[in-house]
Length: 274
Image 1: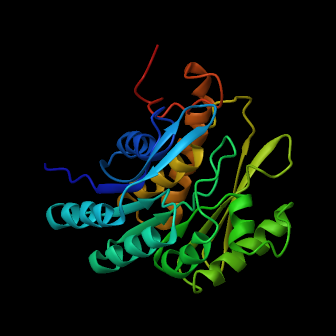
Image 2: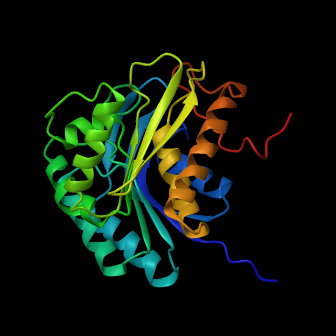
């Protein structure tokens, strides 16, 4: 019996350490049962400690990568990561509007784990105008959500997270889904994420894991969602499975020894056994 694996593309930058960006996305997509493709938007000089340089790929080359890929490969889902500036954001949005993939997961990457900026300030408005409305799911963390909501309030509690989910959903045009990551919430015992579909909330909570290996967690979660959406009967089911994957990948991250800073999660925990 022939098995159809979904084709999923990551549109993102390259982190040479492999913990974030396209390289991490490809690992995550593969680990979650889909065939991974990649469109490179930027080269970075980066490791587990910080970012020392960013070289954006020319916009026309990004457009050509997308169009050439979609002309040949049926893409079931798209994950969008680092886009860097407004011209690139608009170009990617226009390309996806032409090709109309069934699922688009937008991880609004703004700042690296090291604190280095990965999105120009002027690009935030372009992100809101062009990409939020076409995304199936957006996956901001709390600082990113505050930026998207123009710092109207501090998201410092579960109640404020619920308010932010509603406001982000409205910002999206009252469509699609919001998955708000609460890892920055000041709670010692558990990490809380909230999923909102415009009517109902779903809370995902998990014990906080003592590890410094959290580089690229946002990249991996959004990529897992993109891989799982075409394979699950409901969006909520895909979110649940993606969250479970992340929890286990973080739980096994201390088995890796990569760099001196924030190391990567263990994407292939199901397959790499001692």
